[in-house]
Image (tube, rainbow, N blue to C red; front, side, top):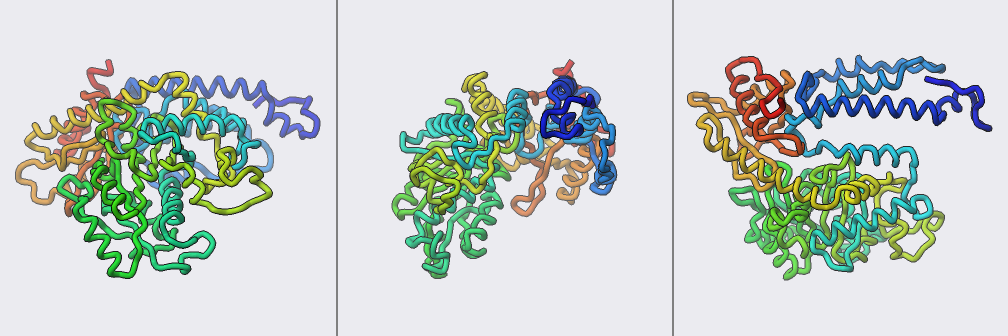
Amino acid sequence: MPRRSDAPLGLTASLGAAFDPEAFRGEGRRLVDLLADYLARAQAREGLPVLPAAEPAEALACWPAAFEPEPSGVSPEALFARVVDGSNHLHHPRYVGHQVTAPLPLAALADLVAALLNNGMAVYEMGPVATAMERRVLRFLADALGFGADADGVLTHGGSVGNLTALLAARQAKAGFDVWRGGTGAGPPLAILSSAQTHYCVRRAAAILGLGEAGLVDVAVDERFRMRPDDLPAAMARAWAAGRRVIAVVASAGSTATGAFDPLPEIADFCASRGLWLHVDGAHGAAAALSPRTAAKVAGIERADSVVLDAHKMMLMPALVTAVLYRDGHRSWDAFAQEASYLFHGPDDSWTDVGTRTLECTKKMLSLKLYASLSVYGTRLFGDYVAESFARARRFAQRVRESPDFELLVEPECNIVCFRLAPPGVQDLDALQARVRERVLASGAFYLVQTRLQGALWLRITIINAATTDDDLSALLDALRAASRDEPAPSGETASAR
């Protein structure tokens, strides 16, 4: 690394070298070249495993903690190249694993800007640009969901924090007593209604809220894994019989396991008739509102009291950036009804100090990457990406249905598909799914996951990389067939990639 002899006043020579703008310029150019070459390799499907398999102990051994007092002479470029090579390659079109997208390169550059500026966002004076951008991004998302002019919200780090934040507001608004100041013992035990298909973070949030395990009451699901609104009265009655006051219903828009969309209009009717808070976990699927081709999936979401949307899932953003949106924006202050006069100087309901409404105090400039991408590329890009991802899932499901050696669990409602290999004569299908998945992952040809539903093991893919083609998905079926016969996985290159 280049060193400067004329270190800025107040810096030692080593600190001066670490902050040297010209050294940073050179390192930055080399890093961007490295990442651009990586993108080209990934998109071309050339010589790059989707998942570089490594056991935990092996990975740990590759990164020794041999930190020395003096500079090691390690090249940043060499270090970053090792990181790239050893990481999972979400930009590879044959990544169809978890619900984390291959982000827009521009958004990654925005993250670099945010990291270098490092403007925390608890108070406006520490993050004026990011706070203003957050305001605009939230308004765009609220409008897309059909919320009115009174809507408001915050950006936060992930759906787990987002769901917890929304449910804290629900508890304060609907408990019937001031839980924040008096604690959960100041009133009767509380309960939330949700289906077993709700993401596990909702159950975790209920525990953090002090509701206990019995405070999350399951609602039945139908054959498509959607919440059954006709079971809501019975679930509420069970909570009452246990001496609990129900405060909210949590519905899913794009559930994690199958991508199911709960029937929001009927659930909203029930909540309105009982005075309950309706929270929609739309971390994955709320982005359907961005396209006229998919917006019907979230019909009724405009009646929710709160919605969570993960932009790092279906809006092509690097993790993490989650929007927590409230139809009545004043409710966004209910989540953290706390005073901190050394930080917050404005009115209690001022939008400028976002730390009053988030779990974080020092918060990253989350809005920058989303604002920059929307400004540069326009909004249609995001809606088209969502709609095409959903359509590709439907085409893949059709291919599975037409294959006599595969079974489809349920028609996909978004870009998540659950299926399994089921050749004639195989007795233990669960063992087969686990075995073929392990072999495909070990080959590096694809990355897919698995889930257990209806007492059986199913393979599960999320078509979330914008470069994934129908040919890639056909090759996935071939790779699974080959793995079942102990054959080498098909080549990582397809005709569409040539």
